Each structure stands twice: as structure tokens, then as C-alpha cells.
Length: 120
Image 1 (cartoon, rainbow, N blue to C red):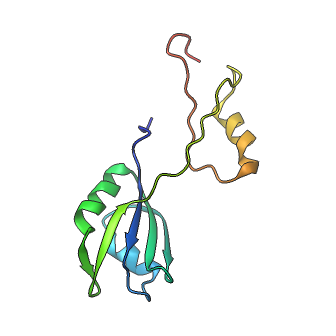
Image 2: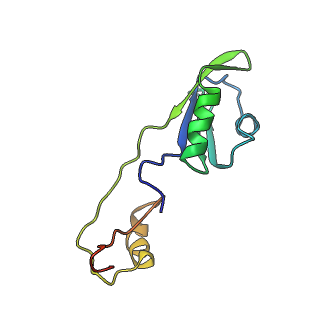
């Protein structure tokens, strides 16, 4: 299981206003991008990488570097909300839980915590 602190979303700021998604893919070509959205009005790209190691590497490599004549900043995106739901029935499966919450919005990551003592 992935540790909860393994954040993989980065924010690229100070982009030239005509920067496109393909340019961000090209810039980060050595990484596996799972999602990329460029907000041209804000000069910002929201990028989800494969894992936290890739995110940290991209930040180290590209933060405060020059991109098309502008110094860009690359940092972890602010954390998303984390919702903890307790006291589920012991026999509840991951699939049942995902089906339960799916009508309320996109579920990016989900994990059920089981007791080491009883294995459920």
C-alpha cells in the first residue's frame, strides 16, 4: 500500500500565457504523467505524476528553472481533502465502499484500514 504522505500532484506556475498541455508533457517527458491541465489564464499547470518519488524529482529538477524565457516554480499542489469514514461493517469490501461513495463525486484514492489483531 502507498503511504498516505506519498503526494504525486505538482503545480507548475509562472508559465507563458500560450503554454499548451503538450509543452508540459514534453517538459516532463522523463516522468509518467497521469493527468495534466494547463490553465492559460493563470499560467499554471496542474500535473499528476505516477508517484511521490517522481513528483519530488520533478520539483528538484525544474523548480526555479527557465522555461521559454520565464522562471517557473514547481511545487507540490496543496493537499486535497481527506475524508475518514469509521465504523463500517467488518465485511465491507473496497468495491462496496467505492460504489457507496461514487455518487458523491470523483474518488481519486481509497483504502480501507483493517485491524492487525483480527485481520479485518
